[in-house]
Image 1 (spheres, rainbow, N blue to C red):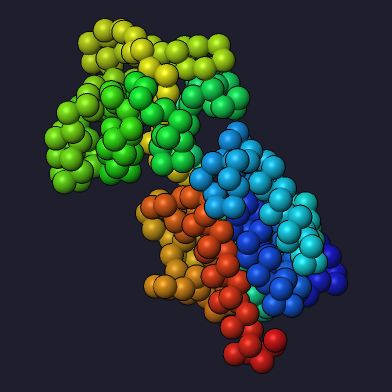
Image 2: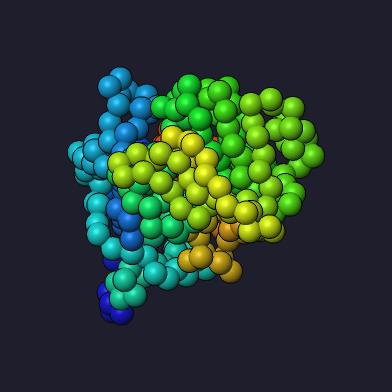
Length: 316
């Protein structure tokens, strides 16, 4: 490890809308932020084809293009954007320590965590292929449901979020198949009742997807009843997964408070964590919304919180 650690005012761990927005605000506040992009530069949106619900892009934008726009804007204000992955932290003391790629040591007066979260997938080859080409497999009904207006779709999931997304889709689509792997929901009774009282949602219990059909677009799914072994096919043009997300917060276990899933906890109406000078933005702390625009907003908040913290400490 380096014998002469670099000292920075503001270290941003992770990119994506939260990280880049934090960088823009921190740089404009003269915090001279250093941002490490992490294992997936640009975050989840770099794996998304069209983004049509982010303000300021009337004609839409691909995910990679949007992240490049945000990156350039951050660099315009002299954010130091670096390739690399923070692999270890030590959050004791007033100056926090981080190690990049297990060798470069950095000391930071403030840290903004924007490591994000990733959707869980089934792992089927055609699911992955069609997802990656924007062919009708997605993990965000709120983001992409509009494109399936008037079409028949399927959604996989059994929790509260799955129920919310199914009812959201039911307002756009004439038919929504909801596939539940077990014989019952995991969701709250209120959410289950909402699904059961929506006439165009058909719940298929003990049902799993064996394959996603279609070459360029989803043309159907092959299903199997895991109790009876009976197989079938659903004629759908879209497949939505709502089986959970995994926040990229393993690095901070033992340092910061998390919920049972791993989302980082922060103070109400603030981005501050239990450790002074450490802030969190974006999907690493957001299990409810998970939208690019809300991530960007929380990145702004984190930078403002960091600036005020440094001012109170007499370091800015």
